[in-house]
Image 1 (cartoon, rainbow, N blue to C red):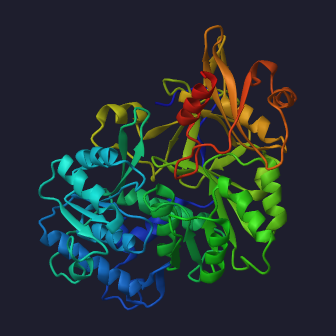
Image 2 (image 1 turned 60 degrees about the vertical axis):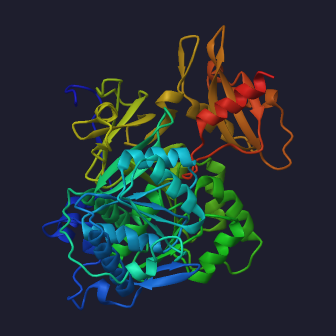
Image 3 (image 1 turned 90 degrees about the vertical axis):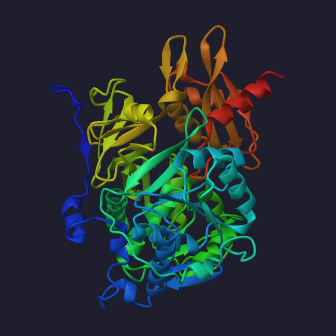
Length: 542
């Protein structure tokens, strides 16, 4: 895979601590998620303690209670005939019981499959058809979707467990007192399958082993500043994605600290701040699209968020003006940006000081991770050249569930093709240039949307922006910027085009600017470029 004699070489984690030795000291002979709950006979283990493990609006769990419920559900699942490696799906809004099920699967030697509750019933059916769950845990509001998809996917033996309603399914609280024998899980067993949307619209299942997700846990526990057993980590994203279910939660459990769950519906900045204050949250994720609203709400309150010590962000580049605003408003909060994917986990990180010193960068390689820039064949490119980002590490997925062709094109000899374009400078800092499929070719020139987006974000009038290639008979594609203006801004399209000329080459400037109230985003708050392009085409074809 790696060509010799090239000018560039893989960039490895830069923090100066051997994460391999850290994980080895924790794993013993196996790196299983069940290690977190451990041996109930050990009085020193977290599972025997009454320390709070999980908080949410409608309840809480101590580590002792979490283990007891997970063990009982695990035994019930085995009593239903589930065998090693069988899949257990969860279709729920954010709630504490998700961790009962997650750890039950780990204890029973089963694989947990969290489902996006925003999916259409047809899409849920596609996921069920692909992973063939033997049991589905579902919130009452989503039960009709789950039942219909089980029928449509032809899964007659699948058990459906409704969490609230005893009359319309199996009583969740009753099954959590079952007895039975459990299986042994190993580091190479599949712990979780995370479904993400493919470019064809067909969901693809990212396979993560126990070793993968425990590597995330150790990596993040190391990255989180001011992190100890007194910490409270609040999940702000949906618990079917990588960041919430693995990268925030597991390091918190490893540390013996508390996970607090923000509801997945009805988000407002004030509601978020209320929960930070009420739960005395110390660590959380605030996505870039949330930051400005949270800072504005915070400035209208007194003595709020005093417990907060650490904020992680990611999903897209932050404009320097927003970084400066955060640091000015919350000077005592450590601010870290991470970049990665469901397949790779966090592959690069950058601190608040580095963000200002290296504007536009998403950082250097995270501990345990290595990355380089390659051409279409994966051959390394010289430093400074733009190409595809390849990464690997012990947390990197080995492939997609039941998708051998897609796996072969994405994963090679342990390396994962991210699908993102970028370049690396002499100090090992990574700069994104957009998704490879989003690259614009205009009159034979390769144009990278991220460069134009970063330039336009420098304008004080621009609140949000996404750049797409609009089909054109003369140029092939032309650069079109979809822009959300700051409240009260009166800038015109022509003025923004002129502004961009001061920061990028003239051939890269937008030839068209369209204004929108909002831009479509996924649950990880990444802009959905395909939908942006559809909106632009619809508007320009009128």
